[in-house]
Length: 292
Image (tube, rainbow, N blue to C red; front, side, top):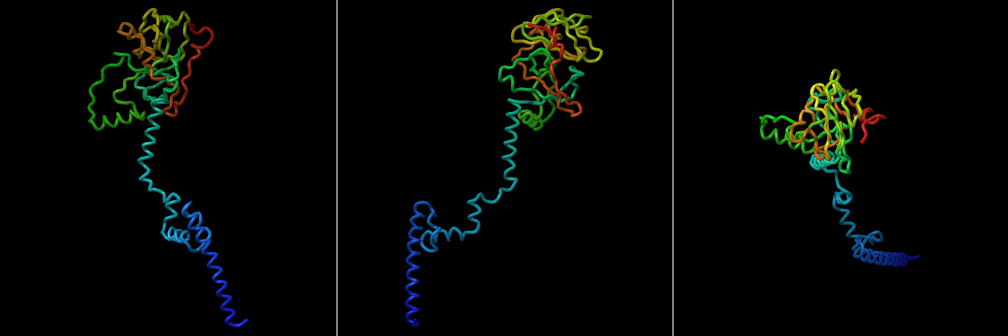
């Protein structure tokens, strides 16, 4: 083949290739109009190819579209703190809240400065306190002495209030007590000197009492009947507990409204060495236990 023939063949081949590329480029442009780059895969030229080249030429563009670089931890910290506070508030309000024991009135079951876990969840589903359970309840009125005015500054008070709001500490204005439920609505309680405590005529065996404490010797009240919607509560350290007996002559007759109950204390959580559940004693569930 002559040199001229070679050049003619080369020109013919180049033209064919350009025609094919042009069709591919046209398809790419149409595809780009319909689906933003679906036609880029065919050709090197054409509108679609050009768009692809521009996108590819911007440094870091692909990384940003794929999720981008990780945000600095300090930018995410406020979000994490907010989520943690919301979870804590939800758990404290509807689930489980820790309470600190302020006195020795429940010794030796509970000691001063113990932390107990209180179930605030089941009351939302109709739970009511039962005999033998340890419960936290709001002061019915006059059970707790008036506290002296706080000397803390506004900042300290605000911090304590905020921490109490999310359940990390007890709010400074929260006035709760913790006692054992002895009798529920309709029960008759007999508390006499020198005799065991009786509920509906059944004598209670009370191994949970503080060593040396007597059931009723320090404050006998005779026989009382618990009205509807109320409880009769007593401390396990009977000689050091201002419970229902101490308020029997007060406005509420010593009874605690069920509506005042915050929840049931079901475990000692702190200190770790004293971790233990708080079950209902056998004297309230065994044969011969109070009925009614």
